[in-house]
Length: 269
Image (cartoon, rainbow, N blue to C red; front, top):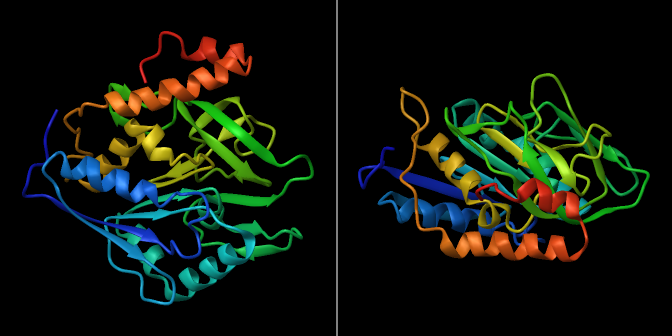
């Protein structure tokens, strides 16, 4: 594996944490910054509050929030256009929950009125008619999910979901994973999340990158990629992070979801 070294540098922007910071997803930016700096990469972590121009960055992290702030965020981002231009130029974008929904073509408010998204992912969301999806979400990456390297598929993904949206993945995007427990996208096909190019959306809170450090390294590899492709990063000592995964899976096991446990036994986190 290669190490990007001290000559590399990254700017990571947490987008509108004052609007989309309900579930602690701003921690994803911190996880990325720490994992880059531990490898000798210079990092600037920016809390990009609303009402100001969005900075130029290599990675943008968009978190979850309530309906009103999500609509406000989408309108502001669409009007400014910085995020769309950055994605077109190769920036990495991570959207979680409401952040995932607003990356698509449209998303709903509480009355299921449709609002325009940023159209960075070929997904469309409407309000579900069943119970709200709340609880542990566990999903196994699909064969078409992104890989850290050719021989390094993502391990199973874990987190916590809290949403009432139903997201449909169109032909220009691909689902990230197949749900083992929980709801995920909720469209009836058992999928979770979507990705295309360097844009990645998911319903996983936690923050997702604290619980799934392999996903964090995938995004860092994208951001540090060269003309030869994504950078394969040197491994870190993830003892504490793996302990967190083990703790959450133990909670799932205690809940009696034995099918989930069977999926995970024998799999490296």
